[in-house]
Length: 248
Image (cartoon, rainbow, N blue to C red):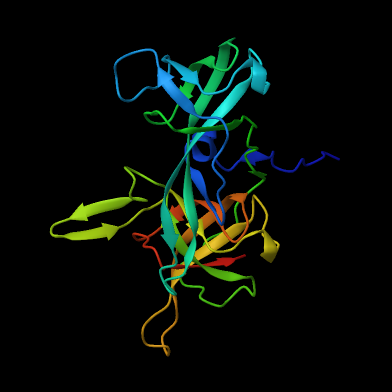
C-alpha cells in the first residue's frame, strides 16, 4: 500500500515580513546603546555604511556581535475606542561590530530596511522564526457564520514613511492595504493566539440585520502583549484600520 505523506510545512511569510516590519510596544524603554555617529557626511546611512556606537569595550561590547537597529515611531491609537495601545517600534536592520574602542565601537550595517540615523537604538540581534503551516483553511467569502474564535480589530499597518501606511487619495488621506501587506491587530498573547494562527478578516454592516462581509484571510507572524503582527494572505477588497478579525 502506497503511503500518502502529509503536505510539507511551508513558511507563511519571508524574513522581510518580520525583520523589516515592527511591533507595538505597550511600554518602550530606550536602549543604552545607540548610533552616535557615522563615517560619512550623509544624514542617513544604510547597508554597507560604517557607523559609530556610544558604547565600547568598557561597556561589554564585543567585536563580531550583531545588533538590531530599531526606532520608536508615533503612538498607535485604537480605531474604535481611541485608546493608546502603545508605540510603534520600527525594525530598521542589522549591524555587526567590526572594531571596539574603550568607550565607543565601530559597526558595519549589514542589512537595512530603510535609512538609519544618529540616535537610532540598537538591541541584541535575535532571529525571528517564521511560522510554518501545511495549508491554509479554505476562504469562503459568503460563509459569514462566526467561527467562535477570539475577535479583534486591525489597529495599524506597517509603518511606511512614518505614517503607518498612510496613502493619499485626492484630498483625503486613506489607509488601505491588501494581500501581502503586514498589519497589526489588538489580539495579543493574553488571548492564547500563536504564530501561524489564521484569521478571517471581515467588516460588519451598519445595518445589524445584514450579514458581515468577509474581506480575506491573514496569518499571525509574531505575538506581543496586547497586539500581534499579521500578514494578509488573501483579500477580495481593500482593508482599512477598524476592519475586524476573527481567529479560525
